[in-house]
Amino acid sequence: MKESNRISDLYQSIYNGNPWLEVTLAKTLENVTAEQAYRKINPNLNTIWEIVTHLIQWRRNILERMQGAVIITPDHNYFVPVLDSSEAAWEQTLQNLKKSQESWNTFLADFDDADFVKIYPNNNHTYYEHIHGIIQHDVYHLGQIVILKKLL
Image (spheres, one colour):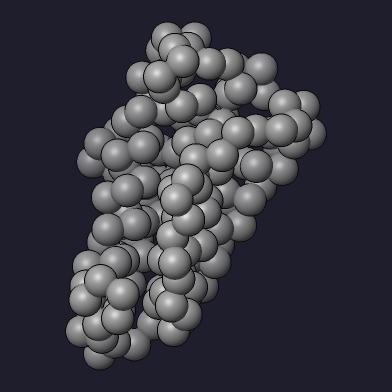
């Protein structure tokens, strides 16, 4: 099996499979309402919704890098206030997360493992490091979401 297929399986398991850590993004977010996702537990903490939006934007950022774009990360680091707190907007956010997963699945299915050694010019990290980094990033924020959900 190609390394990119193994990475794809790992990434998919964190989204909605059976990962070693026993929690997934999809299952964790499954019964979260818009009101819960929008709720600010503490003024110094991000909301679940803000974290999910942040995840989506970083997934897009890294995918675009892997497709050759040079990206300047905005100062807000993709943590932006939610302007529409409706159930429809929350459902759209969850659909955007799902679409970002599908985009990564498609990308990794066609990925040439020889490209793992390519270097992204803005930070001199390999594509391999970026791909593993986005998985680590998802897991890091998944932990935050799990904690915030327990505090609701």
